[in-house]
Image (cartoon, rainbow, N blue to C red):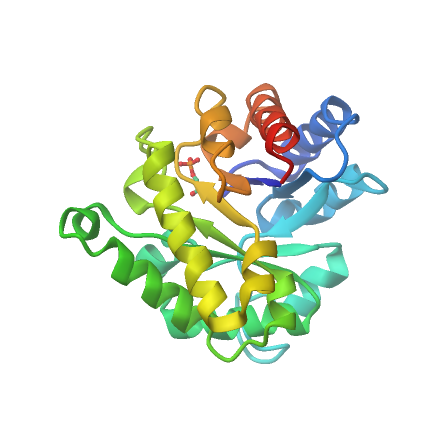
Length: 257
Ligand code: PGA
């Protein structure tokens, strides 16, 4: 179970350090198999890394460039993220795809760059409202998963997690029902099994994201193919994120995942 907070473009470095310290205190009793991950903006990574030093809480970034170094003004490489203390990086978030024009091809290059920098990748996929209405959910998710992960080996999949985030549920307060989410999670696990084998599929963490809140996290996390959450808005407040993490802990305990 992986409970991740995506802070997006929120929190100044000092605020981020405070939130990370509060969460560290609040979640001090939480240990494996539940992993907690905080993904602040680039400018707060160093402060949050310091606040989390020697704690089991992991650090992640929200994006990276696929090249290791070079003349790429404004970009940040995987090696730079690893160097500052990141364990994870989010790749292909729908805001990056839709606002900044990322494609399955660039997502694929970023995944490979993350793995070669020894970062774990959280690869985001999900359909828009129009695509769901037109019954394209399966085709869209299938394309994003297949093209994003093309060329990876089964052992490399051990460093990959997938986040299913229906675009219509992000920041809207409209979460997918547990049944809707479970259906797509099962589809993703099947796709991984076809491409990388049963072992890679059964150990793949598939997170749900999109308006996860303290009051819906328990039901979502107890679905058999949901192995965690990628939480946006509700991860910006220590109490609400703590409640969500504890819902994950309870679900992990109940169904042993
Ligand atoms: P939200 O965002 O929880 O605010 O809907 C989720 C995400 O975009 O990762």
